[in-house]
Length: 346
Image (cartoon, rainbow, N blue to C red; front, side, top):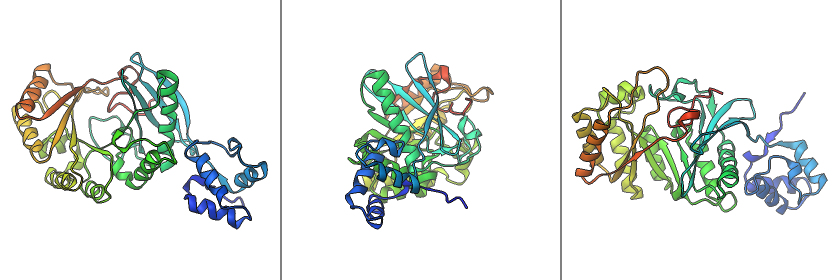
């Protein structure tokens, strides 16, 4: 009978230390292996050159490192890089490196496919196969950091959980990954440089507040009218705006940190005055800012970017009510790497 080896990155540092003690070695050997796994992001035991060959052989006999591989890489005319990431079981997710003049941002995935059903998003049309493990999320960041250094001559500066999947539907693994990313034993990135974007799962938003997380929260809102939001994001029927509002008020009360609302304006869907008025009211509940995001079509033509006039109406009304608003132009559109376009076409 073939015994399946355990993924070594599922072990805590203490469990690694105990493993070595139980096998007649010193506990500090576990510290060395832990550093190789996380801080140095080793993909094989042979890479762990500070360990003896006998120790590396013992590790190989007992464990496996289920690392990711960049299966294909596409580079956009604007410098954006899209990666098709192959997981240890052969499944594929996508991640994106988004460069600007001053920084590089990693857009990472949290699920294979997506748990939700947003009609305007290509990823939502994929069946959700499984959640990503914490190490698979971590590996995406490591891979994009290497690309940032190679192609843009500086380390990765920001991370957004805006790739494939709904992060709050994989909360435990997302939190574990962020803990490793922000730990000095991992990548040592500041939590303030990480943003988790959710379509809005009220119960988990409250849990994040209770857990005293230090990263930023963004909400894909797209309408502040229940009927409209449910028509484009059907899960809103389960998590209506009144529940989302309550959760966000709880978040701000506990964390004292602003919310970012991500908002696409579509022709004939949410481009009326009542849509703007509803958003202004929703923004009055907690301190926030609004990112108006350029829409990226996903072939069927049902959703079309609203006119510049409609967009300007949103901007002027938000600014008139002292709400910070930014317009985000999408990058990587020529390689289907822009917001809402990740669909594993490769």
